[in-house]
Length: 296
Image 1 (cartoon, one colour):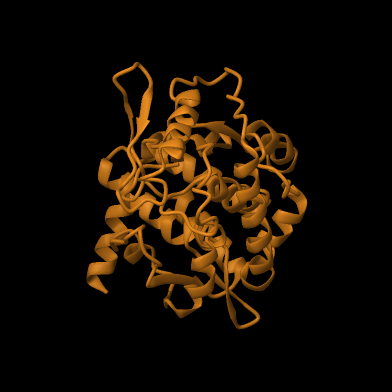
Image 2 (image 1 turned 60 degrees about the vertical axis):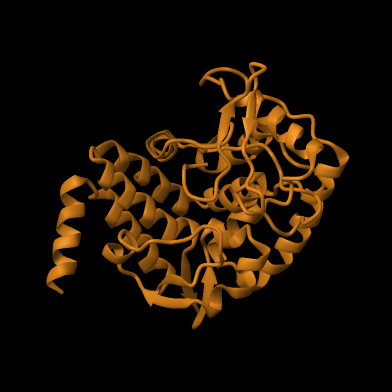
């Protein structure tokens, strides 16, 4: 999970552990048991290092129950609103719907398909670390799940988003190849503003991307496909043609349904455009895009 507005910071606590700082409007803010749970799960991976075993989370039956509800409801909506490539990936990955999978379990399913594996992160991950790991086909994921009182809503990405949204997406060889190019582009992005621009393009594509199939806007972005509410409203957004200069310059609010989205005209064009963008992206490419946009 990369850094961004709307994410709950993980900070050291006075007892040597960690504390997840929830906003007052978070469903779990006034629930001491949930807050302790979030702290305990974050503490498992806060000092995790590559090569170490992925922390095992002993999920409760209530947490598994949330996963079952969300898996069922999202699956129904995916049949109507997800692009075909995502559905093919979902079928190949065959994630469990009766329990929250451990990250190792996700990797066991995913690695044979596209080579991507999952690694733990306590909460926030720096942009360079998060996206850069894609070059080695690694995805950093949180391990907590949303509050049980509103299973179909979360104000922040949780394991539902990270796995149902992104793992199913990464089970597509075509999307996995794009993400690997994202990681390589990070290695060529030396300036902070270049990395921030890349992150925004990722947001409007791999997170909140739309593609036309048979004349209908279908979702391929993990942010849409892991959100029960977003799936209901994304077709009502202002759908604009692909424009990387605009994507990398527009501000967005993670805490609300997205009013502006960019839609590719076809799936083949989508993949070609994304691969071309990330394969050639660096500090100079950003400057050229912005200069061309200003002239236009």
